Length: 481
Image (cartoon, rainbow, N blue to C red):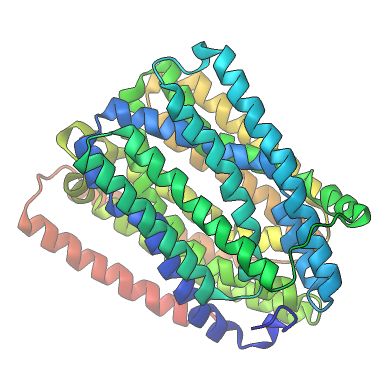
């Protein structure tokens, strides 16, 4: 489709499923491929090495926020205002691209210099690891602007092709260097670092040919974008603190072995994110575009999709709880066995957070990004406080519960403001009953099945129970009208 086409004019459900299948493929091949490769990591990396790798990726996860100052979010917000005006869209994209290039390069350079003169920050971590953590973040963030453009245009095939290609290249580099050359952590860092460079090169050519990338700077456009974007920085940084800083706290109060075990459970829980992301990536652009035309209809559509997503995510979370022991046994060695106790709890955080995109769309539409900022800071503070106070006493389970509690608090905050701004309501009564049924099923599992040794008969019982839950979930989803 062209940038100026009104994406919301398509059938809502048809677009969600027809476009969402491409995003699902993309998520499966990017985040899902990382899950598939976990057996390789857990066999070629000790828990300590896996902990170091995840500590570095946690640091690399927050760096793009400070490289771009969330201007990619501003590009997504103002895309629909400028998409019918080629000169304005070119000015928006070019201004943001060149700012991120210059400013982001300075941020990366500062990080490298700071790490050089403060080696105690990363004890026992080779400098090449830090180089491969910091520098690729700039390439990744510049490429993200192109991804935002394609997603807002619902160009799912091109988006998927690029992301799947990058994921396959990343996996290939990692496997060759880790298995063939026994490079350990370095192999994975190189696998993460190289693909973003190729994808950025493609986007530069693409936007040059499309006439959207030029050497230009528009001060008024930058001012409008940065005013929108800056309040988001604490919010996104807060999300990173909530979701990833727990590795740093675990490393401080426990050890890198515990970080490795926790990280394995967190990596497997990403299956929940893969599922919801494929759907919400479509709903976001549809809702943002449609709000400019028919807000009432968009709110109704969002309410239905939110109810269906809630049921789907509850059922998926139960499957992870049900088969946690089997999954851990398949993808890792005995050294990681205790990760099965964390998988269901960490994945439940994605159930609680599956409504975020609906709320964020409404808040972003009203340019009330301070709401995200306050909520993100509050979420981060709550998570860090719980972790610091209790990890040293109760171990790494604390981090999993802290993630759920802080996610619930943030979701509640966003929901309150979505209601204030647009009177957007979820179907709270039905959702609570569905959650109660989920909790009861988990209780029954814990009572009768959780402590039994692995066997084919036990697996058959679990499979039968999973089939019942899946059928019930499909029935409930069909009844959402």
